[in-house]
Length: 515
Image (tube, rainbow, N blue to C red; front, top):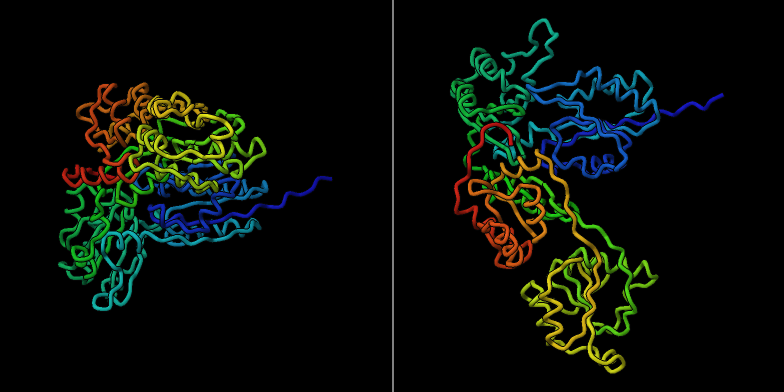
């Protein structure tokens, strides 16, 4: 006798309209715990980043005008995995019950006795217009809103849309999935009595960096959208609220909107920079050229060291890991001067419970060496162990400026390699993605070197190279590339500020179609 397998739960989850920030906390929680995720192509680009490494991720298509996975096949996969006892997330753009076929999937699951949960998402019919500066309701313009599909079931013998009823509706009409049928939609509304000069806005890829908006009237919107090359996914807003766009537009006003920026730093560190750039409106292409690998360094007895210097956030995390490996903790640093090369490293030290004593105003090894050389060492450690000693906890093959500067100040140096930087393989698609950017950011000399080895350094007509500081700039120049932009302060704040300032002086390159 065999035990019966208890069916797993299927979660019908809305991923929102495209902006990763609009995913709900519940959606992120379920993605992070699921055994299987069946997802559409219109989910946010980072929606699956939190999935378990062993989770099965299945692309079930669904992009207007593109390749489709039959709905029956998708439903069969839901049933198959659930009956095998797996926790399943059906992740779809927008809201699963608003033109998302979630109702059909729930019916199939109920018929098979499979438990399910519905997690609503922000629907594109509200979010897209909102990001375009169009409120779908407004006390002076529209007391209500109606959501209508622009793409009915092709198996229906005839349309069931009540065009006369929609023409009489005293509010805003929002059509989903209707780009290819826009001429018919406009003609049908006008024929049913809707004014030909009524304002209309079509929002493509709403809430994403690829958002494009075309405005017009029912009489000319189809021609305007075709001329602009508007493509799916898009929603169409019909009503006087569409005329408010010029007054209320905000998303496109962000300083990096319309710019595509490549982030080449290690994946573990890239998310913070990518998040900041997206918040400024950029379309971010994450193509890490490096990754770090721990060398599991063994810390020596710390008693002789008056100084411990950490030169990167990676080094900060490795320092705490090394302490714990040797059954020690931050108390063993008592009496030392703990130094960080800059605010990012200082934040990483604080995150692991260590507060740096010294952070130079200029974030370079030379500046740190000069500051430590002028800092009075611990009296107890020097009186007991002689000349002041410094332990450098940093990357293998790091530069000589810091240890040379310390030795020149009469400090004995132990240089301990905590981790190494290695190349992250880049494929042709990655290199093509970088080549199609407006900017490519370099946050270290190693990001530049490894991109050069992969054959992806930008040429004269390629993206503008952005350097985080003089050390990275020197590496780029040695590789034959003069950075177009260099941060005044050698940290992420400086890099972002420099990029924004440069973008403000340069026109946006128009792109047709989705980003």
